Length: 402
Image (cartoon, rainbow, N blue to C red; front, top):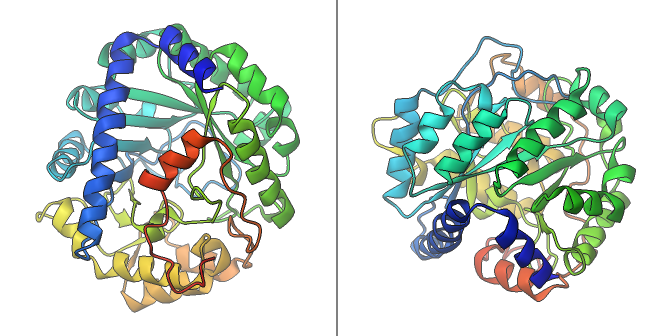
């Protein structure tokens, strides 16, 4: 598997893009995690992987989306984006996830990427704005990987994403990325309407045949103003996803990403470990994208490093989440999320200003943590990578090893 995957990447990705991912993401990203671990020993938390939603606007209307896509546009200006990345880079960071809304609707996106040739960016996108011209620009820059969201078959995609002909338009953008030899991924939010179609060997093989290099399975999170609880996976389906991912990682020549388990199969929350936090389209510093409360903003004149590392709100969130669950605190304990927001006087970072009411309406449910259902990694590559660079970092010490 590893040799086939390596061969595919080496022969289908532009050399400049390969060099950037190897150096900016691989070497420097690994170094940023080591720096994070060193800071942790001193009780200082600054995430090595920062996720930034650069605007709230989107051309689609996805079921269960918690972003204010129908509100007037909020977008982080180019100067603030550049200052944020530069400040993070001074402390060893080199990798940034760029989200929206739809990030390609931000008029300064390509200029922003061009300002930081020594960093690497993962672009979470529906792909519909990636024209041939845009894909060529990304190839010339070399420092970004598009992660294109595909939510199911033609009919399911239209239903899930609230528009017509969604799949064809998305696949057109995906093909432009592959034709330009970009390192390209496909993401799916698994739910009741697409799990049978997309959690399958047939789907992975189709992605491989198309030339896709990696895929990322998320699980649908029923949060936000229009919760669709009927789409959420059942506990046994969550275990099914984990079994499928670990099994196919050892067989299929496509990289399969996950963000919620360590090398031994124990669940974790990237927010609770401190390895990542989120910046909203207004610049608000949130624990994660689905927890829309904040007490700080990247526009703070102190700079983001000092702002992050001095935040009592983020610290309390990390500590509380790690104390009560190895899973997702907002899904399992919305009451604790509300209590923390009220305790710290955190601002509701949504335009709609209904985040507290949304928490009150939520029914606690199982997330990625299914106790006694740990499924270790089967392939040595994933086991080694997670053991050294992506694990729980000892934050769950009070949970009897679970």
